[in-house]
Image (tube, rainbow over all chains, first blue to last red):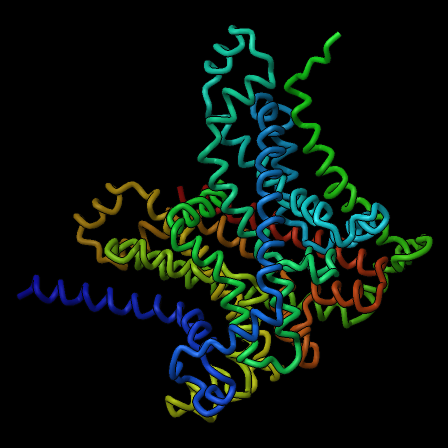
Length: 276
Length: 290
């Protein structure tokens, strides 16, 4: 009897905690449900479920906000930044990891500064530098700006990871007369896979969702990222639910799908990044 | 002679990118902060006038206070909620992975989307929150949550907390996982209840997770501008005008680059100072606990 009570208590607890967790998911559920309802339906019953699979909102959003174009832009920018950050970051981290005395501490300081620096401390000068160099409203410009923004964390991350790779491997390669860059490219780089995977997810998340840099550095609608497209489409006054919700779903969908497949890795990676 | 590529040269691309698009801009902002730069033409040096202006006008001190209040609310609620979920999920391995991923989902979304969705939830026109209140017979409380100076800041803080509670939970869960199993076991054998084990064994050992969570969320919240920017633009009556929002307005509303730069430097110093003091205090607490 006592054991039964204990078991019952445990199930009650699980149900209670699950209720809280599901409660936290409600806004996401709400967003999806509302995206299938017309403005009139929402006005009549603000909490109701969709009466059917009404796709008119999506058709309207897709036609007006140039979603496909913005997804292509976002994918291109995010991909380029991720590759550049991983490449430049791991290259810089290699000598730093092997020479911790002087640079190690400087790097930690730089990362701390990078994390603490509000976007607008760098954004104004970047705006001016870009204007003078003709990089405003260009893909290379926004890619470089994002690369710089994410580079300190990447270097920090790789320094820690490379530091844990035994030196014997490199020394063996050196005995075979490998040059430094060959050691890096053929010995070190292939071992960085797990670190790169985690870092890439992190950078991808940051770049895809960022709002500040593209808002200020891009003005040509053909170059808008998804978030800017959503922002412009919904507008800032009197937001209309039949515009807002489909745009919100379309904007979040790519990352939510990726999250469903890689959730363990993403949660573990982001947590590891923070704990380090 | 062939040019030899040495290991040291691998840092060159990083030095260039960081130098031109990170370090140099910070230096430039520092320089602008002592000028009357407007974005075009020459920047005229005007000494400490921008900083004087910041200290002399109550408007900016108010903005700093709003920033601190917002951060205090977010950090307190988020840390408490994260700790609650982590302590529960640590005890309930059956649902741990599902719940951790579910709680993390909002962090996958952009500030833009979180801002808009919550703006509608709080809306006085068919918004979700008012509809729920009506449904449970508390319609008297219904209002335009973002339009009321008494509730606007809190409403934005809740949206912010909602977004990042999963993050805090995941970090606390990692902390729980680091607690040696025999410590909890010993407590259990001594007949300590679940609550007693949490309060006297786990809580002290979670000190490092507290440090990470509090410092990270404080830094992130102090410098954030996205949610207030999207949800209220600082209104109503300046109730949600944080320092970061003030900077954006000075920059792209008024083109007062010099003054905005000074505000940015103030912000940077505040963030670094707060993070430094917190880190020092929380780490000494960690040492005391171990």
